[in-house]
Length: 183
Image 1 (cartoon, rainbow, N blue to C red):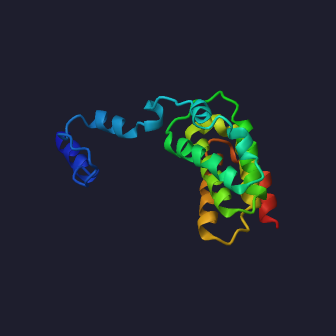
Image 2 (cartoon, one colour):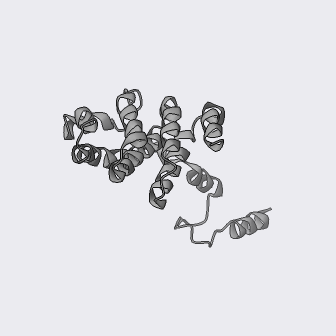
Image 3 (cartoon, helix red, strand yellow):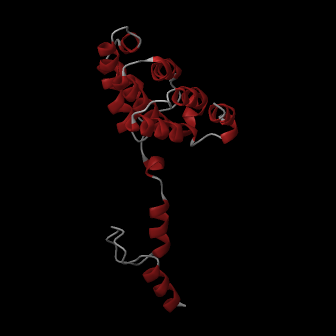
């Protein structure tokens, strides 16, 4: 029996450079630690409070007519959204998601669009299930911009769609995906 366990450890990549650096003992505990999601262990961060401290006029800047002002607002949001593993749910993210989706759908400035997409992708990854009520709106906005020819933008849009639908049933967005495929 012990020989079988030793063989399993060797074939399961005990020497495959997993970076564990352990002594090889306690296989069940190691497997349990490896299976743990860092998200579950992270403390949630209230990025909206941090955003308001950094940029008190964020909401107005986000809808400003000047692309430079919109970009400046998004320059505050992107590091918070992308750099936070677990975002504190319960806040009204709709006040941010809706204008970001409008930017993605309608804005002509590709830099501003890219920042908006990065922000939504970061928030959906950080909120996970807490983002589900915004998934449909995000998918619609991203699909509307899918005609973009720049590969970097299309890659960002794909990542944003993937993260937005990651924690919702496909049926919640399938109607919009199917209508996009029918174009």
